[in-house]
Image 1 (cartoon, rainbow, N blue to C red):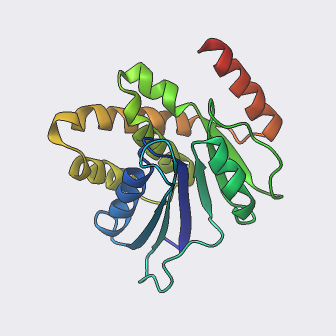
Image 2 (image 1 turned 180 degrees about the vertical axis):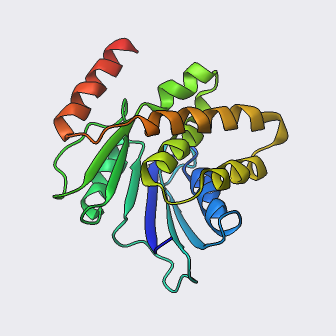
Length: 198
């Protein structure tokens, strides 16, 4: 894998830190690469802003901080406003479909959306939305082998919740495998439909 900068951002309680930890572990323990992770919390642990940044590579990581993410995952409107201008040219931006209204973007950004919260609720537990999003990221980015994520999830969550989390990953991966690149207007339209259905 080439050097790849990844940022995940949302608010406390969405599992942003765990998601980054799972991806990093998948890269460095189960896919033979290297990874560094940094994180940042807002003033409140739950409900405040939260972001986590990863650098993954097939070589030792010399600079651990993300400056221009190749992959940006945003789970809240605040996160979109703060971090979307940083996405690298030809980078991937993934938004939570029902929580983020997409505004102006840097040119050449590849945009995708996933209703991760709704998918998690359909599985019976809203808290696995982060693992749904991991599956979506895995399918869209193609950065690591799928089994590396599966093994990392299995090693990162309590045994009692392992089956649910693996189902969440598979649901996100399937959704991502069928996802189409979007224009900002189409994401806004999807978001409005989702809000109407909710």
